[in-house]
Image (cartoon, rainbow, N blue to C red):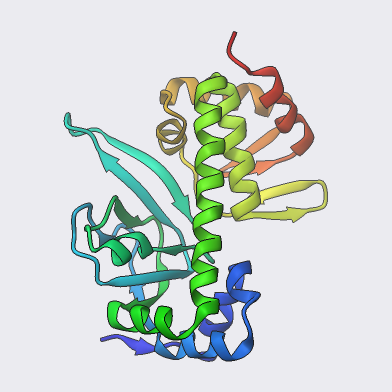
Length: 237
């Protein structure tokens, strides 16, 4: 059964900077209408084509966005961490969920049902502006990744993905950045459109050079500037 968010869970909404920028009154009204949803590792939040039942904000854990090709092969498109909002597009246009979404690890979300989402849009201009900013951020990220797919080889694409995760899931510690979401080589290969064998070759080379560490599927970037330079050096001819 769904329950209202606790005060600690409400505070987790502030992980999204656009939500945190809103006035306190608007934040309180959104959180008051939100319902807690918990997922176990491997549990589906929704499947492509499912009718929309509202919008979600991820409070803790991680989610995997993916799609399945006609041949049955899964392509992982993104990994979402705390602070991300999802499901707003299909709730707006009532066209059904656009991708599969599954929990990579135990996850806690805030669920805004469709009627609450519509009410907040009608009554809180700051909420609508927040969603527009989120859409703008997504578009910028999509355009940046499309450019990387076009211009970079596998090494450059892997470097670009790790920088993305360092920004969205990274914890700086001394001279390192620890990425807090598990990234298996199979998952990384799917994310960059390559093979597990190629990812293993690149990762092994980077570890020997002291650029990264692999700790039980967690990646630690030891030389952030070197990883950034790899993108410039990895442009396709």
